[in-house]
Image (cartoon, rainbow, N blue to C red; front, side, top):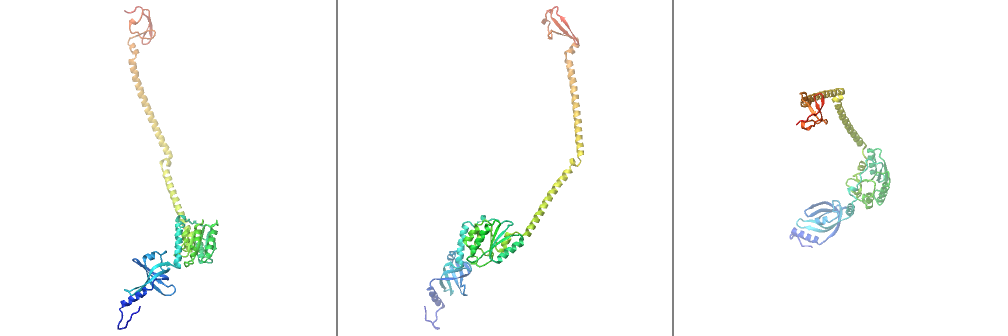
Length: 403
């Protein structure tokens, strides 16, 4: 669109900007590729800059939040994407920007999306569950190390492990740690160590690198091989910020090769110090127990029964003598009382005895059977009777019965 203008007949700037907006609006939509930088959000809109990774060229892009959140995985700073954009010219500000209608990961972004899908599968199958993780042995007899040939990661693990425990034994398998042969070689070494009865722990390690360099350690076949191992596996791939999928299923994740050595091998100095502390603690416990027992024995020995056993026997003998004298006195007193009682009874018996009556001049007439004659009418003439006196008796014959 053109307009006739001259210094004498200029167009207002608003008209010029409207003409520019109309012309840009006719361009329609276009797919553009670039790298996301300066990502920010405000309200329902996400703002970003789409930069050309080769040339020093960039453009501002506004994206509705629903379009941004619909992208899996969500783009982050540094992600390479393909964006369906529509050019817009803002008349009020006189600025140009693109509006994103759709975002698709490309390159690293597409790779990350694929890895994210695989991560979700691994998590959904429970291969990363904590209850599947096995504890590392305190002091492994032999350690299987899978690493690159002549790599710094190998040196870090070996040197740090031997510095912590000089007697530690390693079996090393050097393999390709990137490229098309890496997955096969690492898997083969893993199976070899897993079937070796001498190996107690397996360490898989390599140094840092780009996402593409670490891709073999996110391969699904290798991840499943690690999860199926009977021997505990330690993953030490890259640096702290690197998170290949093998970290999810490994029994222990180490942030660096050096960290792997520290996690697998105990420090001999620390263990000796711990042994010293435990020994001192055990000594204090035993000494304390012995002191308590000695105090108890001393207290027992200080008791009178053990300090002077003869005195205790004498005291007991005095008690026996006292009890014996008391018993004798009690018995004599009881006998005296019994004797007095007997005398009283005897006197009463004497007083009430028929013999005492006979002593006063009375006599007892008895039939031969011993029955006492109580009436004269109870005897017959010529009947033999017995007359009893205090000291003797005589026999009599009834001559004349009483009337």
